[in-house]
Length: 232
Ligand code: CA
Image 1 (cartoon, rainbow, N blue to C red):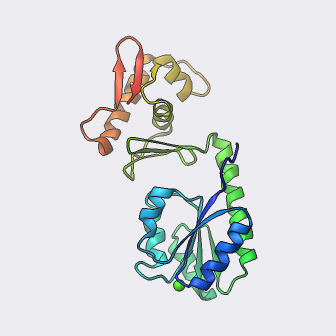
Image 2: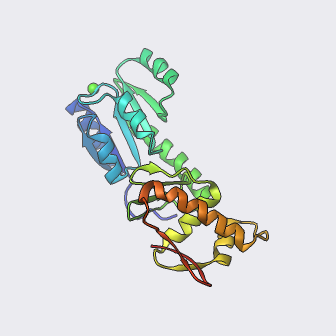
Image 3: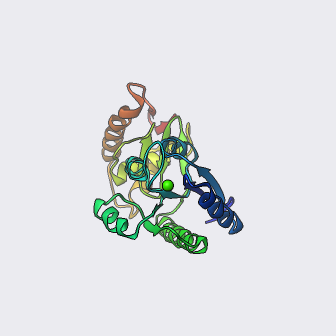
């Protein structure tokens, strides 16, 4: 895996002094860092910029960290470090099962925060490496996230099975390219056990049905008679 650009950390913090210290440390460590000072701008920003990790303060104007975290988790597995002002709060937050990856209490040392950021990103990279390509594919509102086998259309999770996911990931990788049934079979069944053309067709049929949740009646997987399928 090659890292061609620095990893991007979003800091959501309404106390400017704290935010500035964090940004300075993150940038000094080689990260790209962006600061937002309100909760209600986070979800839209994340959808557009896909940061690698979020440091999220609990008490924020607009929308609090709890609301932001649970809304983000509907569409994203981006690592989140939640920042609270009181140690006792951490127990309560853990109990809520918000899906944050780590919790840090104020006052904190920025060095410690950066160390935690690095630890989480290392963990995420190890997981990603084990399933292959970490790149996400975006095409016509379709967002394929290989790291968690998720396909989204305009933010809606299509809820694909692993086989459907692998098929769509292949088709969407090069839009317009035609893949034969054999190629699709070989990609979806890693052990290359024998499957019939009909099995591929039936997966395609289910996949099309699920894609309609996002694309409506417009067909995005096209059959090419006698050859196979393409995504466009
Ligand atoms: Ca705050």
